[in-house]
Length: 103
Image (cartoon, rainbow, N blue to C red; front, side):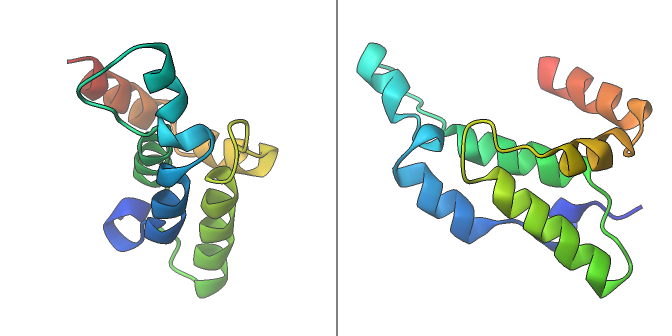
């Protein structure tokens, strides 16, 4: 199964939100100095596109791209529709990703 990240990644949205707003990591730097600032928007985009399967049809691809783009715009931007897609990815996939991140 091909994952979304293998075919498409929201580069424009990540770039835009990495400079400002909730996804920039700038608010954390104001609290304490950290040498390896990682904007949250990059992490959200990578995780979402890794979890979601890439649909075969163009309509499904555009729908998922829209959902992921919307998720890049604000802190609590994950819609119910996107949550349902993620849950449809399967518990096995989620578990394997969590293990890889924790290792």
